[in-house]
Length: 278
Image (cartoon, rainbow, N blue to C red; front, side, top):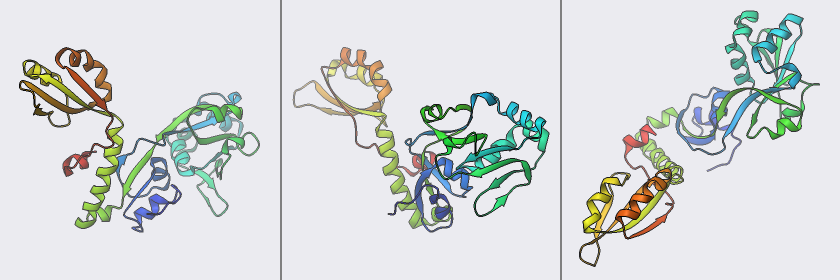
């Protein structure tokens, strides 16, 4: 195992230097890496947004139209030049003014794109501090918007949402031995992700109430039922969604005579079909 920057991981996995990796969905999209996303790991959630000063307005199309009408160059700073370029190309006003000309992407090493009226500058951090001197707009990650506000910026548009994802090299998935090991890792990761949303409950119930209780209980497959040492009594255990617990509680109180609840460490999906669908 090696810890690398998330920006590097998608291409390393695509090239087969590594069979698997964990990175951000944003960096898979930004790098254009041809990899298989096997799972959303549901942490590291961020939003990528277009932001600028309030004076520019809150409409991306309006901003592009205004700059174009004045013959003024629009400058955007970002760590995501490709995502930004594709976003601009998706805007109706941009296409009306510039057609299929791609915005210029300017880095210390190279310049790409044909449209000199819209320039995207690769930013190496502190992007929110670039306007108004080095850039008119920025495209950056945000969680709460606090950093934008502190720098006098407002969110103009959300471009995408991102979180940590588990990715694999497509060639590795075609190798039977490697695929089995990848599915093992996937099962462990998904088990941890899914366990955060589950509760494991243990219930003591009399035989008279057993069938009524079982009708109400959700489970991964089917509740486990075992007789207790005391005749006419059973232990039932099952895994349910956390959001289901409060809805079930009145029924659990009605039919059961003892209840223990704990959060599982992991809930593993061990069938390949279920893993493939995740």
